[in-house]
Length: 214
Image (tube, rainbow, N blue to C red; front, side):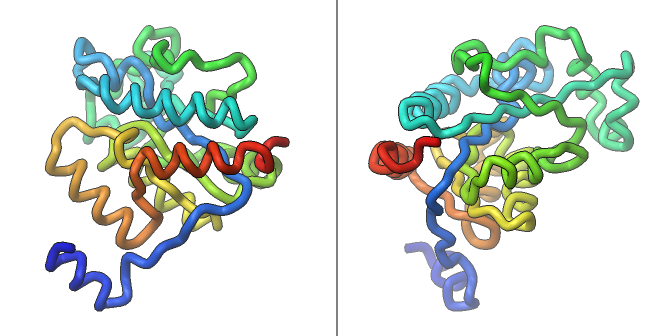
């Protein structure tokens, strides 16, 4: 255990939220614009996409809902991104109809798996995600996707603030650089949710499969 972890725990942080009984897998922005290095916004997230695919396979086997998010802008210049566009001009690549806004084909999204389109970092910002999860009766969000320092972090914070247990599958989230990735995993685990190993998530899904189906 690192000195920093010990310091946080002594300060009353980094307790466990734990898994609930009715999970959903939320795949945040694993779209081609972020997973294909050919896009200015993208990077090589091959390992992370592969880990996410394992989570999806386990969830699908157990009958657990899977939801995707994608950043999509309707304005040709992405002016519906607001001030975020001023900060990140390359968001203009994510226009409706662009190949970059498609869910990464390696995840093999099914037709009954909803894609929630969003304009900003959090999967909850300006969307009906919170009410949709409540309608589904979910109490736990298993987060996979990218980027750890942006949309994963924002979605984890909002997930907690909307009353959901947030579980981040460590190997199934990624970022453009190791520094922001590791720092934000530490921060999420300290304050907003549980960052757990991929194997732990897979064991939870497998063990709960008989009782977690609709």
